[in-house]
Amino acid sequence: MNILIINGPNLNLLGRRQPEIYGPFSFDDYFKGLQAQFPHMHLEYFQSNHEGALLDKLHGAGSEADGIVLNAGALTHTSIALADAVAAIRTPVVEVHISNVYKREPFRHHSYLSACCEGVIVGLGLEGYRLAVEWLVRRTKVSEKLEGKE
Ligand code: CA2
Image 1 (cartoon, helix red, strand yellow):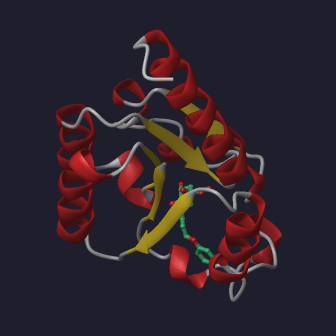
Image 2 (cartoon, rainbow, N blue to C red; image 1 turned 180 degrees about the vertical axis):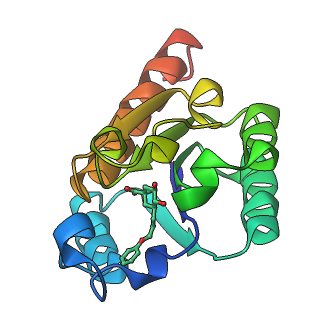
């Protein structure tokens, strides 16, 4: 089972700036721990500060990944192009936000992506990624059972 985690703009700064909002850990360190927790799964991590690169990754992942965890950063609140890409692929996508965007500025309260995603996890810190992976694994197993693949 392949799960792809995609982080958008500025999330490469995790652990280096604003720890009071985003916590003290870099994503690379968190990702190593996540891989150890899901040893039988193929987890891939991709981060980009460029909208086009995120679009290309989503298009490609449509045929390769069984599930996608997406934190599009600030593009969440602005990008109809990313929403269209999520809607265009068949792979289930879970939207994750590290901070509780509803406790923050009003411009963070709207997401173009949520309506195209299977679900949204907000404000649980980096643990949101683990919960999203766990849910995607279960969802895939349930779908396979329903399709009689097991
Ligand atoms: O809470 C989240 O995960 C966000 O997606 C993070 C975005 C923000 O624009 C969204 O409203 C909510 C910002 C990512 C910036 O990440 C940084 C991490 C560390 C230091 C500075 C920025």
